[in-house]
Length: 107
Image (cartoon, rainbow, N blue to C red; front, side, top):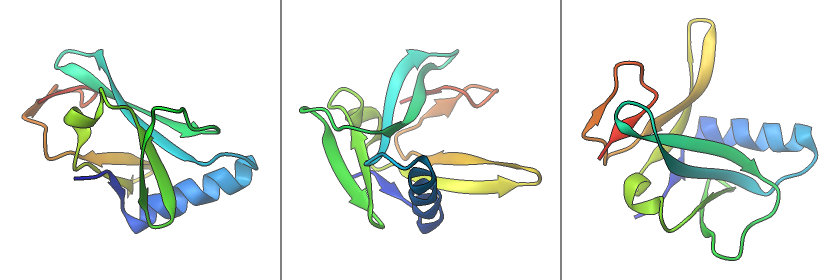
């Protein structure tokens, strides 16, 4: 499978990288955390690591590591506005349950 971005998320990442004046894409990974076990880690990438797995969606590169991929394989990253709030939303088909606060998940 792969990691993908919606067009809206890709535009947001591209615009942000352009404003920063540097960067090659975005990194999506997981870390152990929260009440359900796993939490997403999202950061902008300036330099790719030698062992990165790289996907491309709507012209934006998405980086991850081999340890994270089984937990996020097939995930689509969206950028949404809900009222006055805006942010990334993770559409992950592997999630079996999430904690009540929405910060962590379990597969």
